[in-house]
Structures are given as C-alpha cells and as structure tokens.
Figure 1: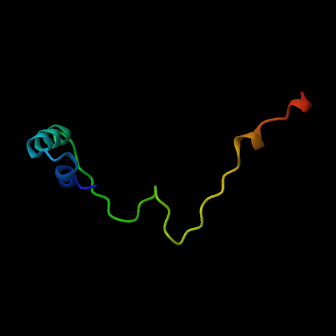
Figure 2: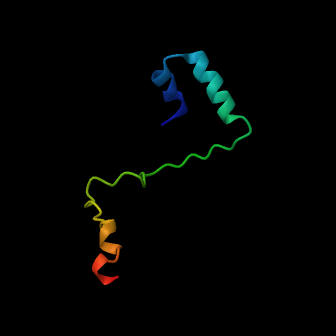
Figure 3: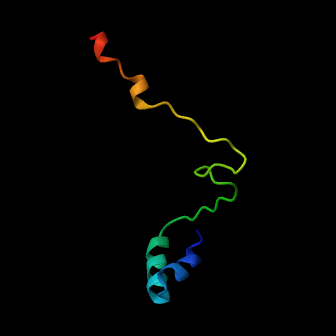
Length: 62
C-alpha cells in the first residue's frame, strides 16, 4: 500500500501528514516492485501442510 493511500483510509489529511512525517523521519524507504510472496499467484495450487499431530509420538509408544 502506498503511503498516499492512507489519506483515503484515515480521511484526515493533516493527521496522515503528521503520521507519515514521523514514520519517515531518519529512515530509508526501499521500494520493491514485483509479485507478493505472501499471497499465492492465481495459477499456483495451494500448499498442503501436514497437521501438527502427524509429528507427535503416539501415547501407545510410551
């Protein structure tokens, strides 16, 4: 999300200007373009994960 999109989100331009000013003070902004690694691509199959109980030893083995 672009920082300027915060104006629509919070609907208070002076507040957003002050907030962004404080967040960007003494920082380096790195802009990364490309597909997100957090959301799967539309053509990718979902990742199947094993349940946690599959890795636990059974009570009978103790």
